[in-house]
Amino acid sequence: MRADRLVSLVLLLRQRGRLSAATLACELEVSTRTVLRDIEALSAAGVPVYAERGRHGGFALLPGFRTELTGLNHDEALALLAAGSGRGDQVFGLGSALASAMRKVVDALPESSQATASDGARRFLVDPETDLLPRRAVADEVPGATMTEVRRAVLAGHKLRIHYAATGQAPQWRTVDPIGLVTVRNRGYLLATRAGADRTYRLSRVLAAEELPETAQRPDRVDLDRIWRERSARFLSDDHLTVLVRVNPARREELLDTVLTVRAEDPDGDHWPRLEVTFQDARHAEWALWQLGTDLEALAPKSLRSALRDRAATIAARYGDAP
Image (cartoon, rainbow, N blue to C red; front, side, top):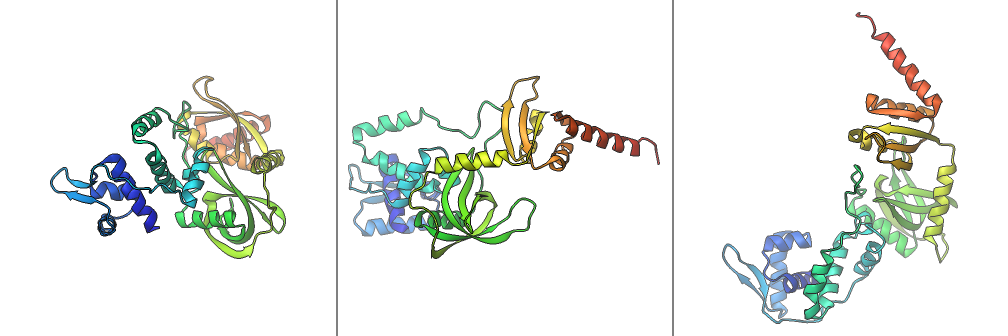
């Protein structure tokens, strides 16, 4: 909304001083032309913003200007709650709302405390993109418009129509009753029911979504933590194949892209991390591990080792003699 953007613009200038139009456009995720129009609107409304020309010019507020602009809107309050539990701001599409909310939080502090709080915040880093293991944590990417529709339906308690691409299947439209959103290791999930049956959807596989006007069939109160534990336990107890492997660290990401779950990991070993992973079945495991060639070794089960050995022997026999 434009009103929220104008508030954010004023707060940016109050907290950081003179800023160029390009910097403001980047911070507010709009065009430079939009920033210039917003500056004109603020001036017309009596906000003392002025332009400084030259190489190091930009826009600034008259010193000492203050007004009460710190009321949080719905998405900003939601962003603070989601961010408090991890990187939900990124997974659930609330990043820009979180940035705006944090500017308002800082601005609400007394002037004597603002610098101290800002400096202190820079000395804490929560859940960065990389850790001490070789894997880089990458958040799921969900189009903003799709995530907005999903989020609205979850919060409003309305039915949701999603175009979903399940693994190995052509995308299909489904109408579901949304229960809640969960983020685990930078992957987002929609917990829902469909025709009364429990369903869990990976957000990155939702190609499009539409909030429907009909009321969703779901309980008024929900314990997402309990529901997630129950669904996770059910998922892990299904007839999946558990495999122990050692893998070249440079190919670890490729392995993780093919598995269903990672149950355990030993990052040390002999410089090749050992992982306990699950696959849909033996055929899925054999296909996935074969792709990595000599950069991976299946340690268990024995039946999978035998299948990979037999496949390698067949290939070797076929290409053993020159044509």
